Structure formats: structure tokens, C-alpha cells
Image 1 (cartoon, rainbow over the protein chains, first blue to last red):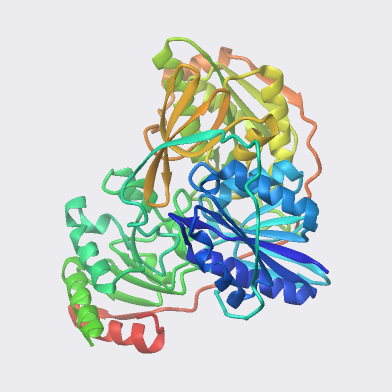
Image 2 (cartoon, one colour):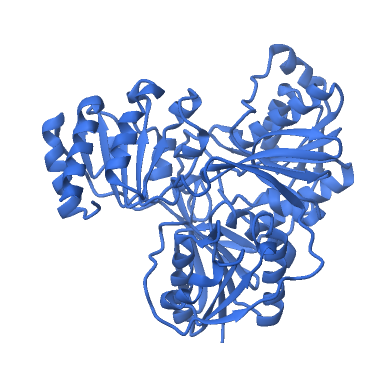
Length: 327
Length: 249
């Protein structure tokens, strides 16, 4: 029976949302193959608290390792555990979150196991018994459908794309031991900026993107107000022009040379919609554009557009949403 | 210090991508090719390191067809000392590419390998960590700035809303993202000098791709949107649509 390993991801001891998405996606593929799903949760003490919960999303078994060895700079230990499980369980496929960590672990595991890897999948299907992975290339200007010739098939899944649907299974927890004799190759000296306080654009269900139409970094309070009105789950993004001008950090850049996002809602404010920006956000479920220029290309991809002055429209929008939230 | 920069020739970010007949590759006609932008950061990082130390040797290596020589010339014009074109196909199978690059790193010897954090064509984001793993070296990804302290590299990484300061022992692989290394434009002097610099070409033993592309397709067209209205008067209707029609608020 083919088995799929879904690698969960934690941050500061708590499971990230994408973990449930990866388990649920693995469930669907396993059902099509007639197989089972194992989830893997590794992290510092306490991370296992929510591990059994992954059964709700379709995990038949949940491997849990709780130790500081799996915390920060624990990548070597995590890799060793996965490699050992592969040897013992003979997985058909391994799914990772296509997060910063997943995008480092998966290629290293691929090199270690000598198997190919498909990064950032946005769709998975089983055709004639074979796993077919759809993944955007050229930042989404095209989609490639690929098949992996190697076992296990390694795939990382783009956050926010696969639904964390419930599909209850046993979720039987089994403990894994800390591998011995593993030395970290990279040591963490320091973490700056509040841990977990900032939601990344790739993870947020709602993203507000700011562009040159906002005229300067001093006007970002407009977007911050809108973000606060919408609430947690909303993050700020930016166009390349704005990042190149030094108004906003690169971590917020959406587009081909920044991040590719797939939120439920993307609100583009003062962004004209250069092809390289559109590539990064066109898979958003709903796109709103606010721009002075009625001919801006952003309106071609927007579901809803308002032509006008962002300096007037954004505060009004924030007020309307606050009102809505107040109920 | 001997360093190697792994780089790739890719279509410019403004390029319109058209799928070629057969459906498994893109049509290269009319496309302007550039060094992948993140690889430019990697080149700049290597050059700054050499300049700050007052010594060193920077080699740019790429796997690709004859056309890639053009991008290697650009790297030479920016200031790298040597360039190596590994002639072979760089497929979507990053591991096949990483094996060819790792073999070259081993042969030339280097204390530090720089890669862009990803190439912007296949978007696989895997070659850097794979090269590190194949060499048995530490890998630090998403580096915005670094310094060398003795036998250690100290890196700032930009990771999903926070900055990590990490260190690794040399030799190491780092993948560079946008940060402190805004790439320089080649000077006229650099362009002239590049013509006299060595550009070695050799056949590479590239493993066959094990990532088979069944087809390439265009992303689904978004359904035609609508202009809700002009100015602040349209806000109320927008909120209603987001709530009742799109159901995202």
C-alpha cells in the first residue's frame, strides 16, 4: 500500500497552518492511490500537543518528535529522521510545505536520497496511477505538469492553495527518537524582529499590496490602517518599484523577483500591474484594484476595481470594514 | 579566497512567455535573456568579498547551451575573474544541474560558493541546497548580507517576517537574495577587460532529467472583472460585493 509522508512545520513550537494543508492534500492523493498518510511533526517540547489533531485532516499516523534538537538549527536532525523513516517505511511520496524551511529541507533531502523534486506545487492529481504535479514556472506565466521519476517523489506545496479540508482518520501518534551523533551545520546566533508577530505575505489569507501610487513610505499608514481594520490574517505586500526605491523591505515584494502569493483576497493599491507583479499575484482568489489610472493593466486582472484617489478611498474602505466588523 | 558563483541564463522578467509547438518547452524567439536577477546579487556578493579582502579569485560557472556565454561575458564585465560554461542542458531537474555544478566546484576547489536564491525561469529554488548537500557543506539560504570571521561565515537571512543571524564553517554554500548586494553595472573598462578574460567551455556530464514535463499550459484566464465605480462613492458597493459575492470579508 503506497504511503505518503506529509511533513508538518512548526514555528516557535506551534504548528503552522500550511501543515494542515499538506496533510489534507496528501489525504486526497492517498485516497486516489488507495494508500495511507503519515504526518511528521518535529519540534521543541510541546509541539506534539496539536499533533493528534492532524488525524482530523486525514493522517492515519502521526510521527511526533519533541526535543530541542528539532528546534532552531535542528534541520540536520529533521533530515536524518526523514531519511530513516524513508528507509524503514518506503514512502511513495513526501510532501513538504513550500515555505522557506521546506524549500531548504526538500532539496537537501532530494540530494541525499538522489531523487528529483518538484517545488511549489499548486495542484496534484493521480492519472493512471501516477502522481502528476502542476507547478507554476516563470512566476506563473505558465504552468508545468510534471511527473517525478524516482521514489519517494518529493514535492513541496505552495501555502494557501490546498484547502485544509477535514477527513477524519485515526491520527495515531507514534514517537520518534532524537537521532544520535547529529551536529548542526549552521548555528543560529540571533533572531531579530518579534517572533511570530508578522504574518508573511505568502501565508496571509488577505494581502494588501502598495505601489508607487502611494507616493512615499510615509503614506504606508493608510495601508496599515486598512490592515488593522481587516484584522489578523492580513499582511502588507509591495510592488517591485516600491522595494527598489527602498520604501519597503524585500520580504514584502510580490512578483517574479519577489514572492508569489495566492491569498483569498488581494487588494492592489496604487499598483499599475507590471507583468512581473501580475505573475506573482494572479492566483489570488479575488483581486481588488484601486488606482487613479483607469487604463492601468491591474484592472485587467482585477475582479473589482475602483478608479480614483487611494488617499481618499483607502481610509473610507478601512472605515467601512471596521463598521462591518463591529457588526 | 577562492569563490565560485553559480548562475543561469533566463528570460528577462518582462518577457512574454509563449509555449512552443509540442507543448513541453517555451518558444525562445524574441525573448531577451539576462542573468537571473538573484544570481546578479550572488555575483555582486562575491565581488564585494574579494574587494573587501583585497585578494581572491571569483569564478562564474553556468550550465547551459552556447548562448549562456553571453551572460558569462556580462559576469566577466561586472568583474569576475574567470568564467566556465558547462555545456549541457539545464533542465527542470535541479538535482541533475546541481550534480554538474558540484563536480565543477570539486574540480576547481573553492572555499565559498554563491548561488542566487532561485532562478526565475523554472522557479525550483533547489540548486543551492543540493550543491551543498552533494559537497557535504553547510548551506545558508536567503542571505541578504554576510561577513567572514576567520573560518566562519556570518549571514543575515531574511525568513518570512524575521531576520536570522546564523553562522557556518567554511567551506559553505550561500544562496543570496535581494539585500545588501545591489548589482553594479559593468563599466566600459570592465566590458573591455572582459574580452581578455578566460571563458572556458567544456562538455558537462549532465544526468538525464527525472522530472518529466508532460505539458506546459497557460494559466487560466481570470474572468473579466468590472470597475465598481469611481472615487469614494464606490466603496460601499465594493464592500458589499466582497462580502456577498466574493465572500471574502
